[in-house]
Length: 135
Image 1 (cartoon, rainbow, N blue to C red):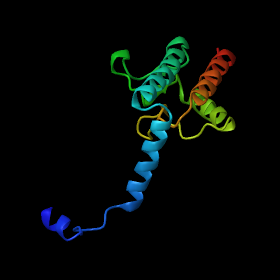
Image 2 (image 1 turned 90 degrees about the vertical axis):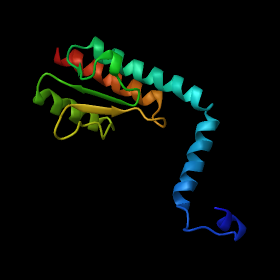
Image 3 (image 1 turned 30 degrees about the vertical axis):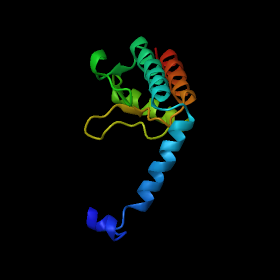
Image 4 (image 1 turned 45 degrees about the vertical axis):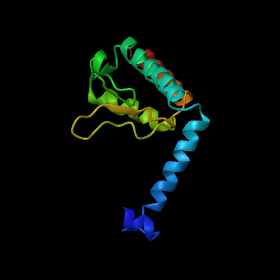
């Protein structure tokens, strides 16, 4: 690296756009309180969704409590027809991208940093309403 530094050069051009997006993401994260605050928010989002899944017999979480992810929550329902109906209601309410992997089925909600608590409240409210109507 001394040769590069001495000549004000580098072997190749760095991925400028990726570095720029990383900078924007880190600024956004810092503006919201940093990693510690985001961790607490993500724990709250995951807790709300898992508590809802655990409370409603119509939804079946696929991961044991001690192994659950804060970022990706997966679940199934008792039959494919109910899954199709729930997925349609999600779409009708502007919730897309939650269909599970094609080989596994079910659902996957990704609770990444940018997803708001309001979004988690919206899907848990829909789950409660759907479970009440289908019980």
